Length: 562
Image 1 (cartoon, rainbow, N blue to C red):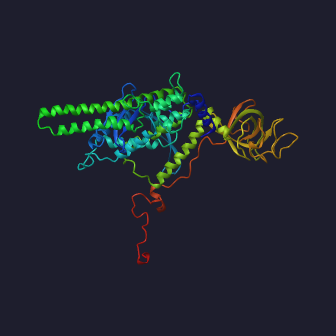
Image 2 (cartoon, helix red, strand yellow):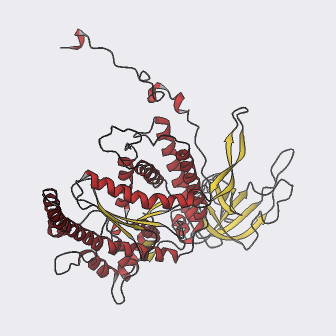
Image 3 (cartoon, rainbow, N blue to C red):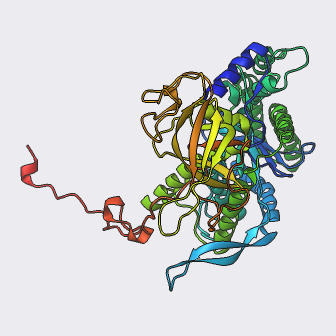
């Protein structure tokens, strides 16, 4: 946790209200997201009890499994959920726009640009909290390999045709949610926690009602009091007034309301199955319908407060202006959505249960690269985030007090102007360390030359007492070596100045200009290219599908037995 985040939490405790942790919204929100509030059965992993789902905040669709242990009822729930999610996804699959993508020419081996289709927008899925993402991943894993009657007429429990496709999309969204900065599948508590700091722990922030109570407490009430009321207040029946639905249920709800209702439903179904004539069957069918309706009412009562809280949280997020780089990250999400759409259309098999070595390594490298890119972009978009990097010595800002034109040595000298920046930050700079600033959306590099102390400021070891200037790129390796107060940082600009002998207009900071340089790179470089899966060495599992790729252990001999 950064110092800025710690200070924000302390201020939230003192003021009784959540403090801003960002000045802009760092995640893209579509105009029409699909909100999913799932509910699971306690004690049985992956057994859905119900869900509220839809794109209209005033008209959600309620899906219920009256007996979660019944395989047929669970399959019907999944099919009904697929009938809601897949048409929503399909509305984004056909609207495309032309785009360019770099590919390797198979004949020449060179990278060339080809024109392809890119979906103009992508469907966005919102769940209340982080466990909701895990539930989506579990649903995808349990449904994408389901066999349909068309695929296997002899399968004992055939799935409806759309369920395996539904599982493939859920798996893709769950995998994409692991990529830092992705917005295809968002847990609202994580997004809110990124933009506001509360006076409670990060675990308590996963309760959406308590989190919103800190961000927007009722009038005349402090955040801590409102959060406590949101998480613990119960009605006359002993039930939570604002259930978490996260997606686990409250034990009091399970024991006092849900279990008796399911038991009545089971008895009604057993009586209906034992009916001997039509009249008796009609009467008992009414009992089954009434028992099922009671379970539906219970699920609706539990999920509706969370449904309303999700839309309230989205309203708060939409009140923040979107960060400049959020659209670029959303474009990468659109590429991801388009690629999976093309794989599904091409009839490729579903995602494997376990990735091969090359795929797993590529995924890990991508996530590490995107994490570094996200941290850099958030700092560039948000002065509050950049302040945390400045306090950590990873960036510095100040006023340009002098610009001296200089040139490199060689047959064709290039401009290498020296820029002196006055700053009160303490960056961790060493000899010839590179720093970067954003110039027209692209990073411009500079080299650290040395420090100069202002009149009356402390001097570092090895500084010249006559003029207070530290040796260029010499003994002083950190501004921490200097006493308090402003310092002068001398930098040498090395690129983004054009190809002429004189720098292009605007490419060199001018005297009096306020600039901000970072010690971290703005764009992350890709790692070494990994071999194709078919060329994976045997030490990493061998080519997929070859049983002899991994050598077998030596056979046991009599000498091996004591």
